[in-house]
Structure formats: structure tokens, C-alpha cells
Image 1 (cartoon, rainbow, N blue to C red):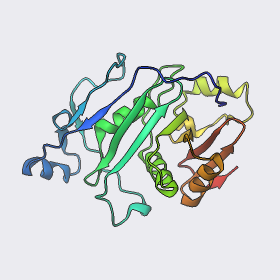
Image 2: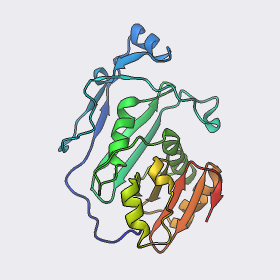
Image 3: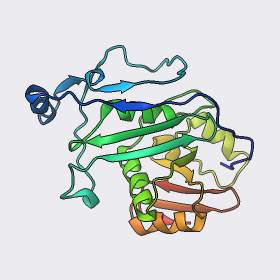
Image 4: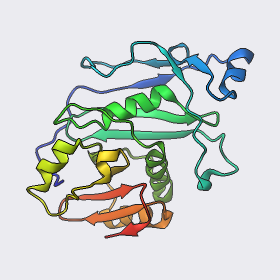
Length: 225
């Protein structure tokens, strides 16, 4: 998907503040697979303006996701992983610690899913947490805390098919439709440097689109184009 110059930040932002109130009982619950906990008790979301969501869960209780850390995190699973993201189409921002205390944080993943949604079809899909790990590692490789600009995240099949009519660069079976790909750039970082950082991870596919102004990264097999 090609990135134009029409996108401008809007006043709508998604802000997150985390307040941990974990006692001994809560700490025990986090280490038991399938244990349920109320994440609203320790994650407070304070949006300035947040449009109604048809996909919002009907209950405040979610189950902790016990997804094994990828091999590059072996031995440092307790390290918190944070991301700063900006959706260039909607103007929404998200600053979040999506991984804490050896677990992916359900509330943070919920907000990521919404930020990465197909804004054309207003559809939300679960984003592969390991894609977030790739984005996290890219910033570490670059040695920057600058926010990552999201050009394209999830694409519904209908949106992907529509885009494929106008660009040969849109795969008809794109990993964007699986929630396992993102097109990104980082303000102040050369696109070639962003590509090199992504390739150095050996974590999936990396596509270089200098004329469109973004780098594609996904969690599929290792490849480049």
C-alpha cells in the first residue's frame, strides 16, 4: 500500500498508564496457565477521545496469554517490552508496555489490535504478538525510542483485494490479512537503516519500498524483497 502525504495527526490519541497492584494472590494467578484476572484493576486506559468499539469485550475479565517468548528473548523473559506507535491514517497514538512480568499483557494487546485495525472496513483482528517483538527489536537495533509510524497493519480480505487492483506490490494472499505483517517507517531514521535493522533480526519477511516510504516486516518465513 502506498503512503501519500495527506495523513496528518488528529487530536484523537490513545494513551495508556499502567498501575500495578499485584499482591501475592495476583502474582500466583499470573503463573498459573489459564488463570483469569481483571486487568482493569492494574491497567488504566485514559483516552482523550475514543470512538465506540463494536468489538469491545462484554466483560472486564480476560485470561492471561501464556505465549512462549521467542528464542531471542530466552533468558530475559522478565524484561518489560514497550512500544510507541502512531497510525498515520487515523492519527491515533499508543504508548504501551505490551509484555511485563514474563507475560503478554492482554489489555495492551487489545489496544494494539485496535490501532492496527483495517480502518477502511473498520474491522479488528488479533495481531501476532511476535510481530510486536519484531518491532520492539527493530528499535533496539536502531538504538532509538522514536515512535514507529504504522502505514498498514491488518487488512481485511476485501480491502486487500481492492488494493491489489491498483498495485502489483500487494500480495493476494498477504500476511496482512493474518495480522502478521506491518508496513512501517520511523521519522528521523533512514529507510535503508530501518531495512538493515529488520534484516539483521532474521525474524521473518522484510520488504523494501523506498518510493512508497515504508519497510514491510512480517512473522512469516525468512525472506527479503
